Length: 458
View 1 (spheres, helix red, strand yellow):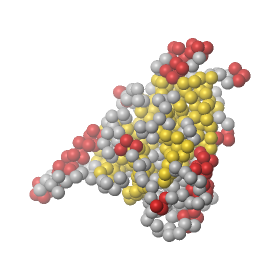
View 2 (cartoon, rainbow, N blue to C red):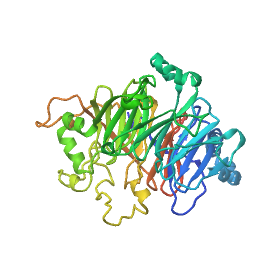
View 3 (tube, rainbow, N blue to C red):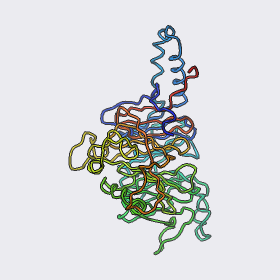
View 4 (cartoon, rainbow, N blue to C red):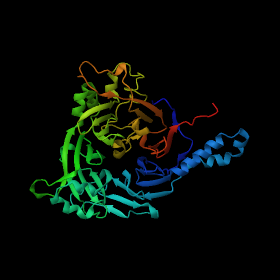
């Protein structure tokens, strides 16, 4: 499936404002794919008009298709269509950790920071320079928020009658759920930014919550932590904990993902432990499923799991350093195990690395994105200047049979394809309509990768 159409960098590219020691940390398209919002490590948010981008790409291809004499005459015009500059720039003081569009109002853009206890909301109707609303927590402030998402307080309709009165005035109100560095989860009504509706405080054992997603019709909130835990809350079932605390969503499950991975594929799990553990970088709902979650781990592994049933379905592995050296044939062409650029030693906090320029850059991982209705997952790997496309529908081969030490398992090992890039890929976003993927780079450059157009004359 991956090789049915060749993916290449297209001729037109968005042109960001380049500054030293800066990289693209996150990006996201709006629902229609018209505006791309990118966040940078220096706190800059840039907005790109992708209708203009596709128009320029079409003009560029028409110019390239002209006869040589006409193309020479249009050389000056040819160069003007190769870049698309931002239509608006917002400046903040700190690294942007996550950026989200409000699905209920596409004029609202929100962002969070790892070093500030705030979530900023911008109203893009007026091309703002400052947020029109700032969400804060008056008690137990954290140092920042790794992730957040938009939802509605209508989920409280399923609560008991004794609790309904608390939320009757905010039915259908837009809300934001944020996960902070200390492991707490808060939900705000966006009209009441200084007082969260509820707060869930987790134990320090589970670590910081790095990513969240909603599943099963937005009923269940799934959270991944930097220690490899998955936490699941029923947002439709609000309960009152002991000692008269405020109502909070019911905790449905809490489990260590690596434990279930070890039970499903023991050999792979041992390699994961040796390759710097299984801290969760992101959790995303697989398209067209109810509760199937794709979990990206700190070591660039991807585990596809049925979160509610705790069943590992698919696994994508990356072997590096000492782990890769133990396997015969480190130059193997098997795309399920090795690829070019993966055999270097993993960056260590005890020594210098060319990739590591600051602690935030060392800890940064690319959050992947689904394409083709969930058939493909694209992301960037640490210490590798390549864009990786993982085939979520790959068929098992003879080399993927489990070892004799593994019990009978339905775990499917996924295959991948590497697309060389000029720099490390730090963020990706799939266009919701066209089959293109936008890559943010360590150099703060932006590249657009997509299938080559088919020549009708051939």
